[in-house]
Length: 440
Ligand code: MEV
Image (cartoon, rainbow, N blue to C red; front, side):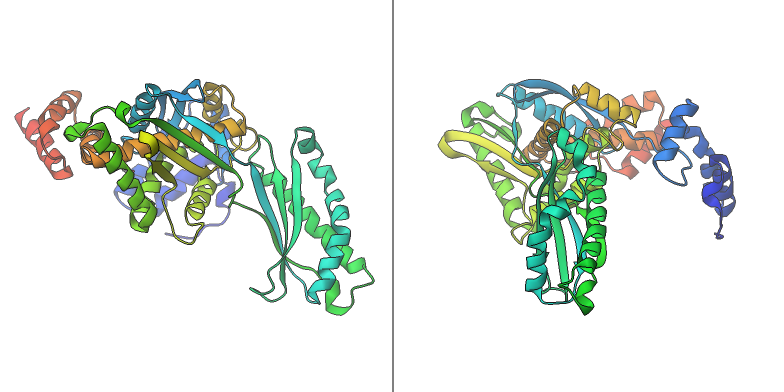
């Protein structure tokens, strides 16, 4: 592999050509076929190219729908983008199961987002605190030109505080803002406010006669929103009388199921090893909708896991109660998402996803995502405590392996039949396809 300069200036075709010269053997042909994945519409392809940098081609993922989601009395067919088999199936089964039992309830508990100017300042703490108290409204007014439009929509800065962290790092303070960003995720909005406030703070301190020597300098380290949003939280739940849960594979009665389910969730509450996998199941559902709607799944992931560890131990994001013979399953999760701005309106399929969901507000989208996460979690734990996870998983996994081995449609049908009562492994499926090829 050689270094190159000016790569970003090359056309997509040139980039592919260059990369092909840098790899060996089979990889050469593979790289050369990357252009096969370009979109037939040059206009759309240009848009995709511009989402990121050094783009060579597109990377396809399945877009599916989980129908029958009754959420707060409204029926949704939820768009999901995910590569993992069984996830959309589990969400759909969960949606159908709860459709017959009253559907999902979801409530947004709070919608605040946070941003911080991290800075260092050397001097007596009391002096800075008194200065901040006096100048706080001036600092807020200094960014009014940025928040004007957001305020018209009902948002803006909800609080501004000076945080003293000098006990953790010498001379370290923060300006911390909490914002209401309405239907926007708000990253650009918050970052713009922070950078302007930092600039103004520096000037104000420098110009103030009460400060002398080192006190005149505010050393701004960085200005950035926090993706930790414990005050942007939604709660989703399902409930029904235990008796109405029905009967389950393995001959489990409704009560046995409910009790086993509650222990399984309790295990994820007390054991981090299990909690991570349990929450991964929740995120299978949440992320699929986050991606389908053009939201930032890295931000959602980072925040969800920090929130799961908010009391010092990583725990399950969902809980079960069996009080008064009622099975109640609840998920509480921070979801800082938007339905305007960013990719939501630029990516044609994200736009379609939002249209399919009837163009929800950010709060409604939070509710939908949480319900899909809960359905997913219900489906995963239900499988785990009844049939085991492999049964459902392997059906789709089998199809993936057959496709990977270039099985013909006839071989796929025969394979499904053959493996209906056998353990699926890559070797077993390869042997099966080879034996069929030998017969032909
Ligand atoms: C697999 O992607 C997700 C599960 O492992 C979740 C869980 O164990 O609860 C099935």
